[in-house]
Amino acid sequence: MILLLAVGCMSLDPFFFNPNADETFEYGFPNDNIPETQIEEVAFESEDGTQLFGAWFRSEQPNQARTIVYFHGNTGDMDYNMSQVDALYALNLNIFTLDYRGYGKSEGEPSHDGVIADGRAAVELVMAEEGLESEDLGIVGLSLGGFVATHVSLDHPPGALITHDMFADANSFYDLNTGLNIPSGWMFNDPFDNLTAVSQLDVPYLITHGEEDTYIVPEHGKRVYQAANEPKELYLVPGGTHGDTHEDAPEEYAAVVSGWLREYL
Image (cartoon, rainbow, N blue to C red; front, side, top):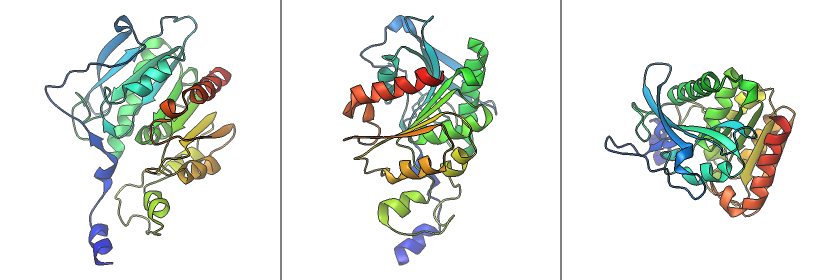
């Protein structure tokens, strides 16, 4: 009890951010499927002027390709998350992704509101560069990236939203992973509240979650599905672990994700 009280006296918000920032870092974009000629690194600004870095991975069949914005998880940088981008690229997509503030080469320090602002800036960049409305885009997010995706979608509703292995809200980490019923606000200054965000969305929404995810247990995905509006679908990936469903069940993952994008984009 003493330990719990002590922990409860400080913010655990930094738990949500695990960046790999390095002033000398250069992106390598390691992948198996994407030709170098189809990769373009982009520098742009967030809403408050923070310099961010992102990258385009453009389809070799642009006339047939749909466009998505991809938000990666809380660990590493764009290079660290390239396996997910690589798997999505194989579905014939134009993909734009970014490093949030404090990640990779992007300036600043990550924060609850900051990463949402960065996500909005990325979507607005894609809309401006491609001459698209938000309903012409797919928005896809993994784990923390799901938090960014759902909150950005409140301002820029996409034609299709997909989140992978996303948590329900901050307190659910402890409610579901430890069985402790911790009062709201006890351990986090910010709620990281995806349940409220998805309940306010009116977009086609696919929720995927690994059945064997022990980091963000599948009950999170079930709670998110219950909060979401139609049209929606919950896909629990057999054998799927956290952040690796594209590798744990690659054929099913590709079929479900590409099917959702084809139906709504």
